[in-house]
Amino acid sequence: MAYSAKVMEHFAHPRNVGEMKDFSGVGEVGNPKCGDIMRMYIKVENNIITDVSFMTFGCGAAIATSSMATELIKGKPIEEALKLTNKAVMVALDGLPPVKIHCSVLAEQAIKAAVSDYYRRIGIDPVPIVGELEECEACEVDLGE
Ligand code: FES
Image (cartoon, rainbow, N blue to C red; front, side):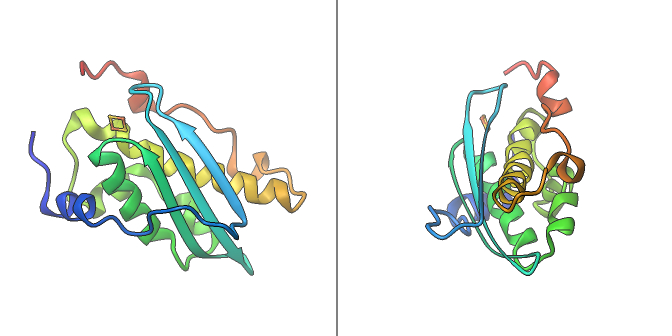
């Protein structure tokens, strides 16, 4: 199994790791495939994600994809952050080995969970905007790990 230089770099030096005290929304998701957990914090000002951080009990691929995902949504409007897919994160990292694709879904789903929490806190029903949080397609496939 080979990891790209970018994956290794984000794994070794993950960006935006840690707890956030003054968050606007926080979301936690679990990966049904491996049992790992991801928590994502966002700070929102004027509809812009001004800060983001994550903590995970996840593997190196989960750390690298979350690190990259936080970099990609920081400073962006919420609508843009919601469009970020795990595939786009993987492309930004120059790919992941197939058996690790399910790890990348944690970050995407944690962002959606954090945004949903933010909307709930300000009294907006998140479902019409964010949708129901569903299991990823990759996680439904037996990856033979
Ligand atoms: Fe669990 Fe990668 S997130 S093995």
